[in-house]
Length: 342
Image (cartoon, rainbow, N blue to C red; front, side, top):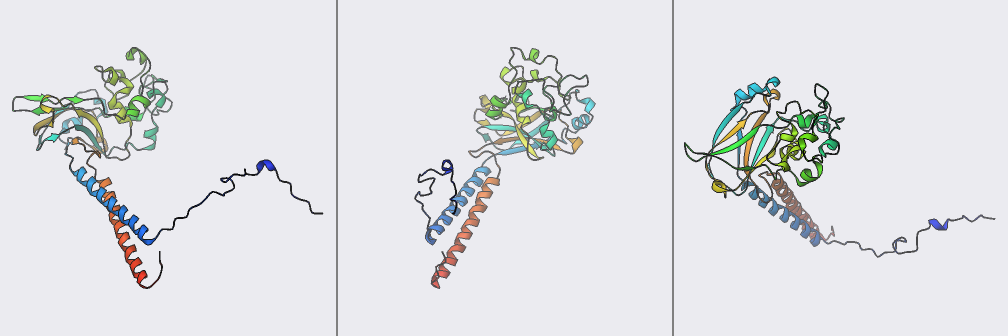
């Protein structure tokens, strides 16, 4: 006698349309005209967007001043790390040929500085930067403690190598009148970085909260004195620190340093004329054969003046249109021979 198999009824799927796979199905039956319409529409859209993005990017105004060799004396001084506490300044005059209207941004740009090294990126303490445990330095090798075994705050290779040149911009109204261009130190960092990833320890006085710690090796002042004029921009929430701590993917990069404060002579932007950058030179670059620049730039609705996105759309649109014409030609040729190709 044949033994009937025993089924566990609890494991059977429910008798519903979904679980019994009885839902109505629809299969797209695309004709040649529909496919060609989609291809032509996609190609035309990408090509138009590419042209718009390229024209928009080209409408930005940008001026870059490389001061590596202009401040050669300071660069030579900084090659010896023992001179880190010696002040060195230089002035870089330049001419702005046309007005920069609207919001103007100042960037510093570095060449040949690799922020994307694996050990460099890991050398930081997120718990410390969040203000949860400022004495947590275990992940900050090799910049965990100072020579006298005092914990470094902020610790790690990223914080230790912060860009610390001080740059101010002067407008030379005439040969005797020089006006310092007002710049804003706020609004530089991402909102999530400023208010989520970086927080000061809860204390009424930052100096007392960081008491007993050491500043990074090549810093001229401790973290609680980064901006004593603005408590909202001091300590771990200092925007210059936050911007630097977001590491760059490539060895050549620029980071936002200041924003133009549009008042008085500069209410509509930067007028054309003679200017000068007054630089306190602290960040060494010649030791690793790098360079550094200051960049003044305007922005558009798509951001800066990069052409990559526009070129990508343009090339994609052109290739899609070429493919569309090729498909159309094949379809017409086969249609004449009475073959249903699509």
